[in-house]
Length: 561
Ligand code: ADP
Ligand code: MG
Image (cartoon, rainbow, N blue to C red):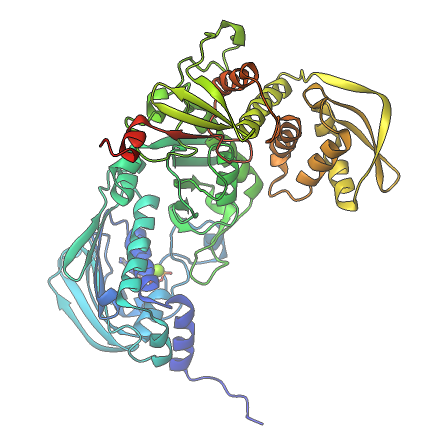
């Protein structure tokens, strides 16, 4: 059996280094952390060969005094934290005093620095953890640190580094994250001698977003700001016409530190549900400002995750701020932003109805005051499923079930807001069998369902008694309705999405089905009511309610263009 031994110091360092710098991008991240902590407002990153040959970070921060310079590379040496108390109120990105030591253990490092108040600067060269040169030197105020031949002494690690291209991409995304998290810092990234990215450093989040995603995206974003009990959020979120098939364009920072969050992206998805199709996600930059004592970044080796004290409050603040901003930006409010100047792609789910009428969902105007002439002229029904209509800019095909669902959902939602849901009592209570999961969701959501007109009570362990249904669902089978609603509530990502889910399930059960023959009058009614809803282009589950074929598309299809 092998004997237990203490590792030599050099091996300890190499192993520890692997936790912190596992690829060039993580070295870049640590060096940017240091530059920002030094108060720099300009940070330049130059990389060659995806950072494998060299990566250099130059800042105009307060620099390092010559006497301190060798110490900066010792492990556990830091100027940022002196005691436990400091650790509990961190305002810096760094705090472990390990990054420089780790990087220097697995590369050759050249650093040149001058403290703001000193006349002369200094340089230091380190090879695989050993100081090989130190001298006074003329240098601009600030720090420039170059990391050469990263991992050249750790073959095992080097094998894991992927292509130059992939590493370069990772580095760019690190720089973007910081540009978004720190809009007042001017970041420049150059790759192999060419400037590939630059942020403005104006301090405006919108400028940072434009630098990273371009002005077109910036123009289609809406600002969100909210504050509650010392929690603050500043964000830019995309209009529903802009979306992504994944969550990679969701950027979150906590007190200027870019972080991965498990919950916030889901909260955003919830806020966008009904605006985006299922499987689509928004673009968002979300900067949270929290009391430093409520944030613990010391839970992840590369500080990519933080623990926060009031996560539920934060999620709820974000949810309400984002839903509110989306509501304000809906077609009725800013119609011109939604109506594409020229619709030439099948803009499924994104192209709104040509609103020939004003959407007045929230000013209390009764529907009767709205013009009776719909913007769409209904031709007929196809396959007893789709309503076919013509509008000012082409042909619309509307899914009768999805459209009706949207209408009923909004109507129920408004009635619930007004505590005025029309209810249809049953002559006699109806007993309905339920599964254990359904029983649990009933126990958790009974009062909520009752407020929606669905009065249910547990009866024994596997049955419940139904006393009333929402009037809107009077035509649906009561046991199907109950089954659907309770099942919907069984698996919830967040407690406050229960209302939304239950309403969607009720609307679904009450809506006309595919396969039902509708007469012209019924179809006109659906189209007209759909036009009045604030979110006409998606059903409550996020599927599109309609497909639009523009005149231009038709002309193109027929070879007229
Ligand atoms: P930490 O950031 O956790 O303190 P590091 O190993 O990253 O640990 O850095 C060690 C110390 O070196 C820092 O505490 C700081 O005093 C100094 N330092 C590193 N980079 C810079 C820089 N770019 N400008 C000024 N000081 C720096
Ligand atoms: Mg650091």
